[in-house]
Amino acid sequence: MGDPRVRTIGQVDDGIAELPLRIGIDHDTVTVGCPGMTWRLTLSQAGELALLLVSACWEAQQQQDRAVAGLAGWLTREGEARDG
Image (cartoon, rainbow, N blue to C red; front, side, top):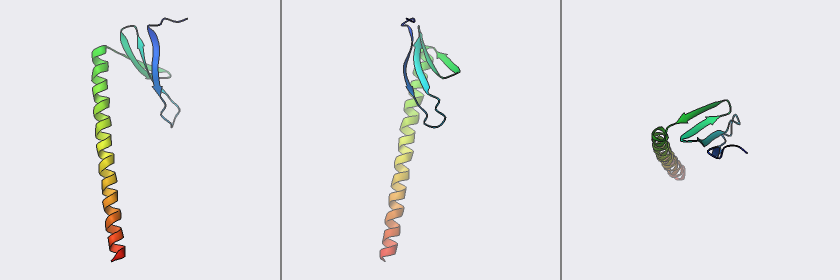
């Protein structure tokens, strides 16, 4: 059995190239990588990365909401124009 202080916590599959992004720990560092490449981040660096990911998720959601609202507005205008 391997060292319990070195392990994968979880992974996210990209759904395209079938390269899982793996998140794990290696003693006192956080590991982020895919097969063939792994970064080891200090706890401070991992915290910065976590904040950036949360920020990116929030901004992506805002952009999606704006796009959906824009599409809904366009569909409403098209329907009104068609109905005369």
